[in-house]
Amino acid sequence: MNPDQEYVLKTIESRDVHFVRFWFTDVLGHVKSFAVNPNELGNAFEEGMGFDGSRIAGYVNNPDQECDLLAFPDASTFQVLPWRPDSNAVARMFCTIRTVDGAMLERSPRHILARTVERLAKAGYGASLAPEVEYFYFRDSGGTELLDQGGYFDLNTLDSGSDLRRDTVLTLEKMGIPVEYSHHEVAPSQHEVDLRPTDALEAADAVQTYKMVVKEVATAHGVFASFMPKPRSDCPGSGMHVRQSLFDKDGNNAFFDETDSWGLNLSATAKSYIAGLLKYTPELSLLTNQYVNSYKRLAAGDSAPICTSWGSAGRDVLVRVPQLWANKEGGRFVVLRNPDPACNPYLAFAAMLSAGLAGIQEGLELPEQKEACLLDATPLPTNLGEAIDLFAQSALARDVVGDAVHAYLVEEKRREWQDYQQSVSSWDTQRYLEVL
Image (cartoon, rainbow, N blue to C red; front, side, top):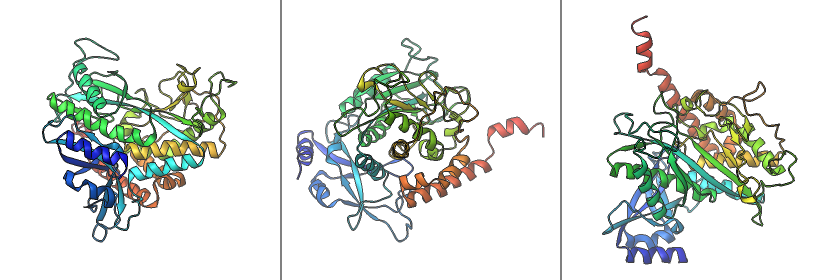
């Protein structure tokens, strides 16, 4: 038994933990869980805990023939859940999913990201990611009634979410997830919490935990929190901008070069990485923006990117290269701005890291700064249907997620797109019913 596992067992005894929840994520990004008696953990660390995987979205090809899977808890992710009682406490651990013969489940999103991290390591790099996650508070889950009329960085009676954000940040820190910023966002009742940079797998785990914490704290305050990308037509949507940088084997920032002739302190590696993001983001958009509603945020005039532009100043570019702290090695990073908080973070992070790495390995050259969408810029998909078609034809997408997950997502999302196209909305009836 390793030290992390020994720590788990000691903490369970000292903190009166009576339930340990095993967390894992399905292909669509939903957290799944089952509770384990602490007495079973010794065996679980060694042999895993069996469960029926036939109803976990994307995990098996034939639910009638394939169902038994094993969850191996990752002791390094152990945390007591602060929103549950101290007596008879509840803890959680993220899990590695294996087949009954002990092989890694290739369809597991967490494994897909871990595999991407391994590919980066073989190329000589480690990754650091910092998600900036936006969301809305609403009066309840039955509608989109706003709690305030506040705006960007407001700190007064307009910002009724201050106490909720405070409790959210404190809860995250209790769970070992450090927060860098938290503030009211542009839209009324919209908020943002920015997580500190960490490695890719920890960042994805943190996003899943963060979303759970936000919703739990909101419920405790008698309101509802939503990560829907575009919940109201009269408000900007919610994004999940991701700050990212690579480090070499010696721990040096591979994106930093103070001799950069462009004056941006960007290394040749960073420029090729950005070029990879520009080239491949359109065909990987199904992983960063996976719902019909995602593309209602990615619309002109909504401070969200609509094409493969980049720059250091514009707020609607796909890739932003901030100049604040750019003269320091640790401050040289780039920001991908199209992802939204409804994505599966494991698959989204695997996609962007793979796109950047492809840019490096292909030696792609970054064009001069283009703050706006020029004629030669590639447009991002304007709807889920376009995103599916690009993803279906993408060799890189298939390489990132594997053939089985690629096929599953294409089929599942085409079904969702067809359902949407066949639905009749209030917009249709309001616009056409009386006049046609």
